[in-house]
Image (cartoon, rainbow, N blue to C red; front, side, top):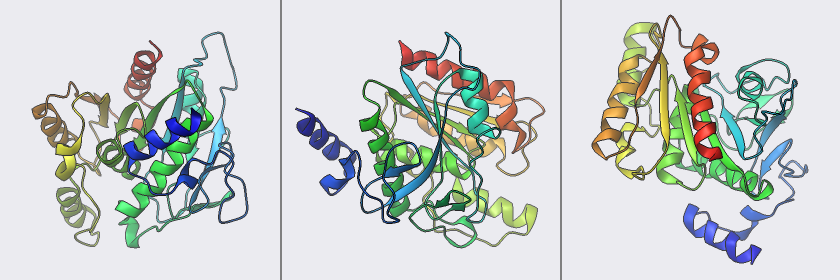
Length: 279
């Protein structure tokens, strides 16, 4: 029965190879995909850090696993155990939270498989496949749990793309400071920060038509964000609403591109989604 369910999931996600479902596959770096420090399969693994609430209480939800995808940072990131967005999420919403290192990124915990493109131009089909496989393995290791996928900035763009291309990869999505209209965002960054021009990355807005109409998704952006302007979230939400999705943009007051992850609005939305998934 378990194998039948695994194969059904394989068809749903469109991933090739039954190894994607090996619960204890050996990663290319020789470590086990144990769902604690690595997630994936024998082809590709992502580095993860699993964070339980330090101040656990009776409110800890047993029904939801939160996965956090960090933003763009030139191929380097930190998966902090005692601070950072994932650690704060674990504490604020009292849920086990997995900080997931995006494909091609490195940290003190090792390197994730995949490619971090030039200037972070890496929201690619190949990288989405890798993240989807890692999420699928986490699901298999956490039977009975729903997955809330939270993304910040470039991680939010990838989460939005996963929701459309791999709708079984998570059960709800929270997009913070999303560059959801990638061409318009890149043009803005050229003029506002002197960044290099157009990207080849996939754009969530261009793929909004793939989003299943029942998807549970919320967006939050700082009203003082001068990187991923609110309008990039607004245009994406309008496209989703046109498909019949019940979603909205929440504005984090006085929050910037980075501080949105510490805003009351961010934690409020995360809590709302966890509550919805726990029913």
